[in-house]
Image 1 (tube, rainbow, N blue to C red):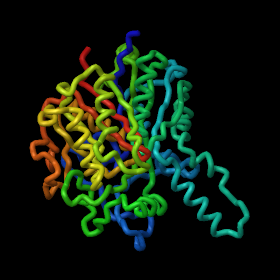
Image 2 (image 1 turned 120 degrees about the vertical axis):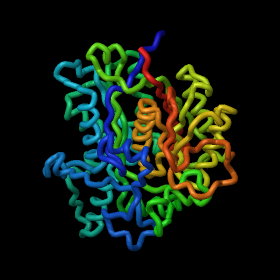
Image 3 (image 1 turned 180 degrees about the vertical axis):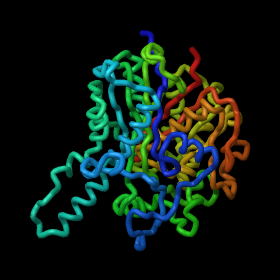
Length: 417
């Protein structure tokens, strides 16, 4: 069977370093940190007092007060980034077959803020179950693609992928596979997350997963630095319009890049810790390369998972070394989480956008906040520390690894007719 080609025709982003794709990209290439002290709740008694929050987002201004109250922030974010992507792609759904346009969305946790608020309100009461009628439909992780499909009248495949921090990479891969098999013409895909609240920060603090660098939040996310001490929580959304090439050409769409492959694997090792030798991570990169019909020699840039954790970063370097061999010295590696923080289920989509724009602009966004070399890492590896680098980027790979040992990797390349 001959697969159909799949291209990227629209992008949308709501991130801690920019509320549009252009703002996000400009912040990336200029090395802007999105980390600051948390403003959305009182952090006095929390170990970690900072995060990468979305800034200047007005949900009521975007949706209206009545509608905004019906939606958890992770859905608000999804709708906002999707509106930008739909406009960017020049979509007029009245002129398209909406039965062949679907939505596949990723979220690792879903409506955590809604769950927290409702349970706290119940606990403060006398035991009478007085729950908001929107509690369940606001909270469930699959509701974001539901709302996107309702807004635009899209009747194609519609579901959510949940695989922790690999969630939106999995959503991209699912959409890609449906398209190349001819099961649909277009997908709105991506991911969103909103966990910067008492439960999210408190829960990750209890796991000792977060950085506690409260004296200098802006430099707390330090992937591959000797003094990294945990990840920085982030929030937001990323939307990518994936489209079958023939359909895109017929409607005269602009094309950012071509999606050419995706791989999935499991660590089969531990509930939260990555395999110490990076076996699952290496396997998933090799699987993505095989799926794309490429070799390590074809890859120019890897947007790594790179969370800034003491145990996570070394295993990924081991995995890349195993997957790429000597080619590792000829590619650029960077972790954009050094700027955005870790958007969990939205990370894959937001980082895929960074990879797509690196291809389009031939610029590698940096890994910022590097101060001290870690002797565990080969100094000949180009981590793109602290400053963006210009180079021709024909092919970029983006990794996402999640709790439970879920791994997903996606590959994009320059579009050629």
